[in-house]
Image (cartoon, rainbow, N blue to C red; front, side):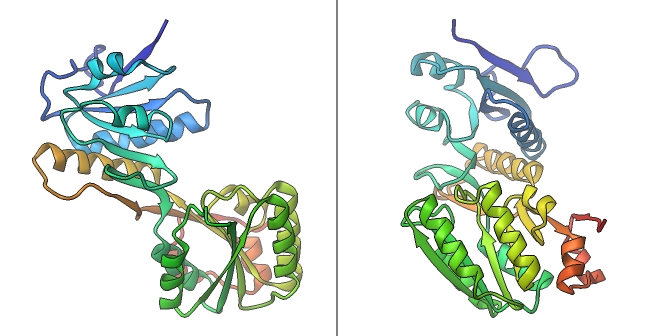
Length: 302
């Protein structure tokens, strides 16, 4: 049996608002059934969307694939925010009353409104320059012609803050490991390695090699994965999921009010920054008050 779980955002009623009863004020946030901690990510985004939309909002959890006819019946008259790549194509095929809004995906999807989970390269470059002003070169290893981040744009943004972004394209995990080993042999103070969003190359073993080399040669490792900071990377820039949701809700509200803007996806502007103080101390970087204004969490030195 196909199950579609509906969860109301209203604390005043046990029943969700009726779908289609008011297409100008009813928003439905759709996301797949996943395990924790990924479910919490979707739920946090959904809460933000409810705040940004400022109208009746409900959540649909897709427990399994729904036939397009069933899904269309449920959602045809509603404003829809779809989270996660799974099911987005199916939702795109429906004849919805309003344009589809998409979030929590790693790549831009044509002809939809929304936000990717990839932080804007200008923000990453800016945070790097604030937290490590001595940096002049950044190395990044990506899959050949299949990078999640728009690295040509990133090169321009890093260049704007006086940093050279050097891109190493590889075909597979073996090539990435070889490239990282080659890179770290020549790095020192003023250099950095960036592990970008969507990275599938840096295993725990390879991360250990990078961090050991970083500790020895005093170059910086920064990442789009906050768990890497716990392991010893200097800092991480990653999505603020609640504020992402707020932006998606605001976008849905603009669409409901008749906005005529062209459909496109934008990189993420709202981020969290976590810093490892022990690594900072080892690198000789004192976290000034100005730096701390751009940091959300400092992992204390032990």
